[in-house]
Amino acid sequence: MSFYTYIVASRRNGTLYTGSTDDIGKRVGEHRDKVRPGFTAKHGVAILVWFEGHETREAAFKRERQIKEWKRNWKLEMIERSNPGWDDLFPSLFV
Image (cartoon, rainbow, N blue to C red; front, side, top):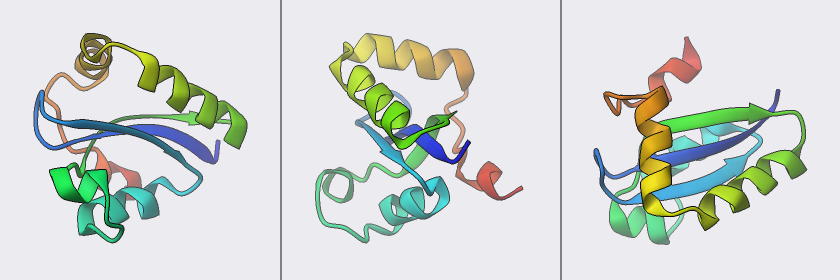
């Protein structure tokens, strides 16, 4: 799997951003370093709280669009199921 859908947050139950990428380490690093101006830089959204892998870019993008349509509560529940402590998963990408 080399394509990902991910959610970054500002803090537990804070502002959320959903995206997709083919290089999750690089992309989340850009969020953390505020490399690109925009929503995540403005709102301090940089903690990787959820991600999943996909076989194709299209599948990752489709999942991103699906999640972006969800109610906030559904996103929070999905994060809580897989990461109840809202741990930053970024370091685990490099283990």
